[in-house]
Length: 448
Image 1 (cartoon, rainbow, N blue to C red):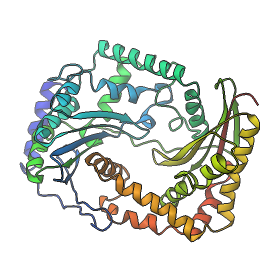
Image 2: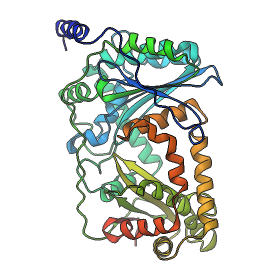
Image 3: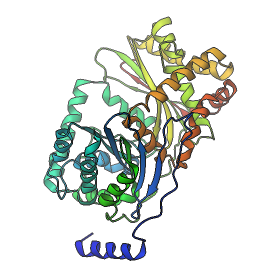
Image 4: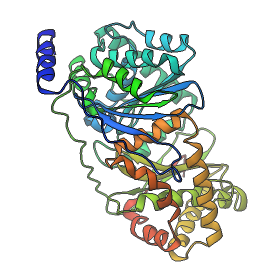
């Protein structure tokens, strides 16, 4: 948008919208389940703002999240969202390249950024008296990011080199992208953040600029501020720095996934591990019924969390068929998947470990889990759930996740209760509906 168009937009915005917005209704959580309160409102340009005060420490966390993840890329644009995440640190109208990092670190803060299938988010935690600095930095790159040919080439070259270095250091790393492509057989949902093919290399300047103009806009973003803040004063700061940024237009809806898989998929990727055999095993869950997500989370803890979980106990302690096991539940743009990665000494141990995993899942589908076992899984989950909210950043990320869920924010107040109400019959029904061969993928590593 050129300066003349922007001036016209701001003039029309002033004429059409009252100078001061009415106070948005406060979305309050139930203290017995969430333990803190927050409020949510929108600016005139569509930016969604979530505030939560916590005066335990003189710190504040600011998170800005855009609906600009990998599922928004075309199949031939792999790496575009990740490239833009890093370009966001290459300077804007009033901030020089990498100066954003310097400003935050100079006041004793820290910062980071991540790109996921459904969004890209930036976060910084810093002394609460530096809140205005963080908001100025985030607003400046939201409205005036400097995407130049030189910045594109420097950033692209750095990211490709770093990815090659990671692959060289960990020979198994490349298998994760192959596995994702099998587990999510859809052009948008199955491609990686970055790969070793030509996706990022072939991105044009126009593609990068178009993607940024479409998705990195206020009405496709969430601003969440958690910490030692005065709510009224913070609202004034947010309005000062963000209210005049023009909104975007024509933001496409996320693509609807289409998974075509008639039966179990088993593939072998030979030569990728030098000294060990192993495999990826996963299940895809889409579409979900009401409550399935809560049951899947408790099932994740039954199978994989803690030394006494079923799979860790059997493979690592009882049968001794594996020497490494990891995994968990993943949310990929609204599609859930349970992913397991296992390393073994030889092909025979691979086969035995695969059979053991499927056997334990089958048992859960045929026999109700005992009250003691499900109680232990729920206890571990509750500890992790509450621990994740013990920091400003944990709370902010929880609120951002809720904002991107598409549900009214006040659902958070009773969310923990829904996890705690998962029972053995519900788990059995879930397993029999979703843990079927047509949703199962196995990728074996090493020579058979």
